[in-house]
Length: 528
Image (cartoon, rainbow, N blue to C red):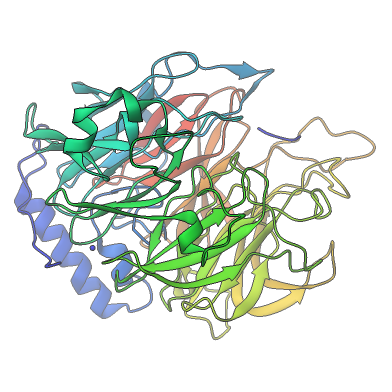
């Protein structure tokens, strides 16, 4: 791939257009709740959100599936997520947004339509991929190197939000129906925007995936490129279900640090388990330094911040707009966030998975890989060979790029214990203990210098299935694999492409157990 949540109200589920009945959804949800009482630790409260509503599934980005995934037997349907993919050699230097799946099994797909810009949202029937409707948008990207994601989110009130021009968001209610109420909201005031849209369209851009809390409020990062009537500066915005907007600048969230200018591109905000705290990163710019911060999700008042440091050199870690690392909040409230090392390449471009307590007052043992990666949560009971004391483990990418520093090309996935340390084989510092690691199965043009090199794992957040004790992982070889934690083997696979045009992308599990993966600019639906 690349070398170089005000009062909670439930929304009744609807009969899906493909006949996935609301009673079935309700019954399945209650079955999951019952299972959670029987098997605590296997299915956590974080996993009981049935729709796949955004990046990493939950507002904590744990990527835990709420239903058993189907066997990886065949491609059931497929559809492009990029109508004009731009290749650099055989690589795609782009980040594709996570598809969304409603409780009624409508798949909402973000699609790039132009060579350099242009997007739309397509609603497709989960059973067979039939196109139901298309939602255009006037959103345009901020200046970039690798193409950032255009993201949408499905709120707890079954409202679809997606980015629009000038830092606005469009919404569409009843996303399972062919038509529904819709509108446009600006976080700084819709009337202000509509009074002079041209003054904002070129200068205010949404630049992260959108996160929704359990109350139907949404949060996202935005970047400001120049002068505007409100003198807006880059930061994090909130829009309530009732359309009331607010924001906090990146600089204010960092305690007024004048060097802080932005929220890193593609870094989705994460919510604490009680939905009262919002975590996000702020930086001095692309490949700059920065902080992990928390603000009150109700008021956006700053609560805490911590400087992001390379644990091996104590220098400022690097935050890249070319990545998609987003905070993950564990079941115990600890926060994990991937960064690049400083000096760059001193850790083989692996970066670090930094680890903090929920109050951002304590730095804990890091993981040995963090680049373009958001950690997934693995309940410890899913790994029979694990006999430690941790209630949950972490799944991360664990590549070791050939020829980068001392990288040997043995690219792996890893399950890590965040509570126990081992010596990092590159730097020697304490890092999270490896519980399981598995190398990619496909050789990557091995040479005398790198005889064991394998194609790398191409995921930025990987779905974990607590029902089958496995993870769904995508490889640069064009194959989707199931990594079984019980047998510690790749037990299932399905060929998606010939292994070109791969990009770091998510895997996810739909409400009927269909597994979704993106390879070579195409979304594949895999299952029975």
